[in-house]
Image 1: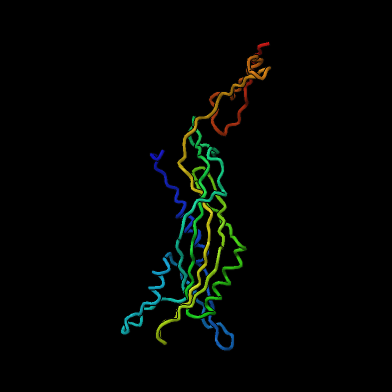
Image 2: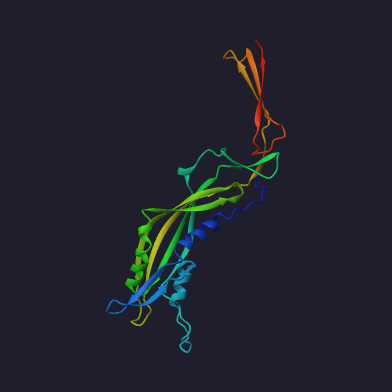
Length: 251
């Protein structure tokens, strides 16, 4: 069962798609007259909360003023991966696609549904910066936002990827001495609904169908055998063909 090597990059594609949603957020700084004096693009990285916060709070060498950590900034990380029982379907369902040969089709069984929890962190040093960022995110999640993911290009399978905003939390880490750096952290929790696909298998093309008709419930009185074949027999998938029907009566 587990002797087939395959890799569709499902989680990687989902993480990249998630990051692309938030990689173009900007904030404005205004003077006392309301004029825009600065526009900042908020940098985004894949990092855990502890690591990102440590980078922000570290103090540069007092003699090297060129070293500085940009705030505001955002970071995100994958938190948990859980099976989604609500989206389970029959595992024997298949998707099929024509390949380059004339004797087989590519087939793939029903995907396995999982939910990925992703945490997005927003780090700012003042409230207005944080509110600008949050207000550019929340209106798009009511409570979900859909992306299209090329899940299995070999079979041309595309999935709608619902991203659900589960919660928004806020904390103000203003502790320690008076001159210690202040960090305001917004934490947004998202759930992404993914499908994981197994290997693609080769399936033979059906070129002959035989059906039998009976005249009783016990299936002892056969009346007709019907045989259906493509015309021509050498037809390839996608060809414009006809069919030949052959009937054999037993009455």
